[in-house]
Structure formats: structure tokens, C-alpha cells
Picture 1: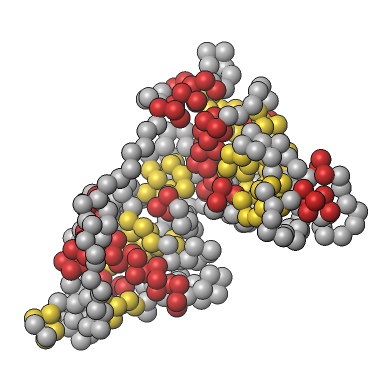
Picture 2: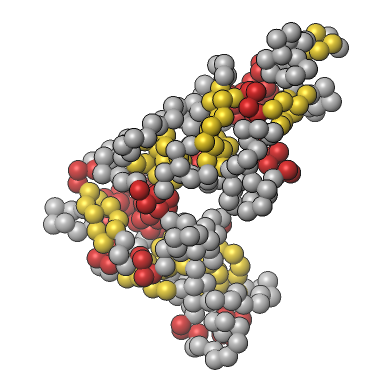
Length: 369
């Protein structure tokens, strides 16, 4: 099915949804025997962080101390779209069955009926597209959500077109991806790899640093990349920003700080960036496979040498950030570049080896580029 956005309409959340607050300020103790999902401010596992029994929920107060509330205030009915309002803000999940949750979750129920699996997933996906507007410093508490807006397909009468949403979701098809790379990989011998400064391999620069609140999406043209570990770092699709030049497709984004420090992605389309995002642009043509190899090593280096909210990348990625790479060899001897383009010792990265290695991995043969 094709999407005709001319038939979509902007609604206030309060026009479409009943918005409820979550409950717990303090997560209850768990026995490990529960079956009722507990939702928290997470970006994983459909929002579920634990499971509880009814007795555990009944005996646990909101803050861990008296007074205690009745269980009907703690367990919520299913067929709800649940949205994180703190921590990993703006993640949305459809919950089919009853659940309990922290106060870091807002609960949405349809005003004119009930969500089903398909309409719930559709709305959750739309909400996630606006996730870039929110963050730890700009929480999406219910007081803000009641003023928020959402774009949805609409009927000729101007109501949300739930039937269209369901049909659209049912029309999506997924076929398992197949790979021809079934051979067992040989162990990688990294003993001959050499260290390179990142700024010697790429042109390194800061991103646009555009705040999400300063973006609009009336006539979107460019991806908006933030410090995120999902969706290739893309958290929105925004209008052209006056006075800002988008970075070209093929450039790499690098999260310089925050919870997902070191997240490094090749961007497939022209893009703007949020605050605290670095840009890596190749100094010579490199294949997608080679850049995937390097982006993976960058992430691994960041896990070892850098720390979110402590030793972040801002002052390092353009100066002293290093990583080890395979280098060109002539038999057992290193090939040395007399101009020392890539390193002070004249070592040359073996771009072709990196490319071939990625291509040899399972599903590496399915990567375009």
C-alpha cells in the first residue's frame, strides 16, 4: 500500500487518546516467578524490565513505604500504547495484556474504541518518529503530552482512520533474509595490525548541533541524526534548516557522549545532526564494507577507553583517538609509505582486506554498496 500523506491530519493527543499516568516510583522486589509485565524507561524488550505476581504487586507501595494503594491502581488493562517519558524518552510499545509500570511510562488508550495489535503498532511507530524532540533534559511527562500533537491518517470526516492503519500494517510483508556465506570463518590474526589516528584516516568535524526543538517537519527533506544506538542514529525526518548545510550521504556519524557514546553509523541520505555528534568524512573513496569494519572498531574502542558523562569523545576524536587496523604487507614485510600519509611510521591501512572480511561474514553478501 502506498501512503498518501495528503489524507493525514494533525490531532492533539487528547483528541485521540485517554492518557494515564504510570504508577511506581520505586520498583518492587521480585521473586522471579511472576507473569505480569513491569514496564520501565527502557529502549529494549518492548519496555518490559521484569515480571511480577499479583501478590508482589499488591504488597508493594508506590514508593516502597506506607501508605499502600489498592491493586486496581497498580495493574493496567492491555490494548494500550505505552510511552516512556523519562530515561530513554519517547520509546513506544504496544501492550496486549494487563501490566504494571513505573511512573516513567505514560499509557495511551483509544478514546473511540480499542487498539488491536496492528493499530497499536502503527501508532507506536508514529510516536517513535517524534522521539528526537524529547530527552533526559526535556521529559515527556503527562503534563507535556496533553499538549502534544500526532499526525495520523484521517477519514473524510476528519477522524483517525483506524481501518486504514490496520490494513496498512497487514500489508507489510517480511521474508527471512538469506545468505550464501555459510563457510566457517578463520580466526583473525591481529598481531600485525597497526595503530592509526582517526583524524589521519578521515576528515573529522563537529555536526550541526541543531536542537530538536528548533526543527520542524511540515515539508521534511533531511534525516535528523542524534546520539542514538538504534535506527542508524536517525531519530527524525525534518525540514530544511535555514543557514545549516546538511552532511552528504556516505558520511559517518559518531555519538560523542551520552548513554550511547561511540555509536557510529554510515548515513545513507543527506542529514543534519543534533548536539554532541561528530562527523567522519573519508579522505579517499572507501566502500560501505570498509566503513562498516571501521565503525565497528570505533564502537569497541569507545567501550574500553571512554565513558559516558565522564571521559567522552568531544576532545579526543579529532586529536588523539586511535584504533588498530590491518595493514598492507609484502609477504612478511610491511609496505611503507614514504609520504607517511596515514601514520608517522608509514604504515598503510589494508582497505581491501577490511572490505573482503565484511563481505565474507554471514549476510555480508546482502550489504549494498
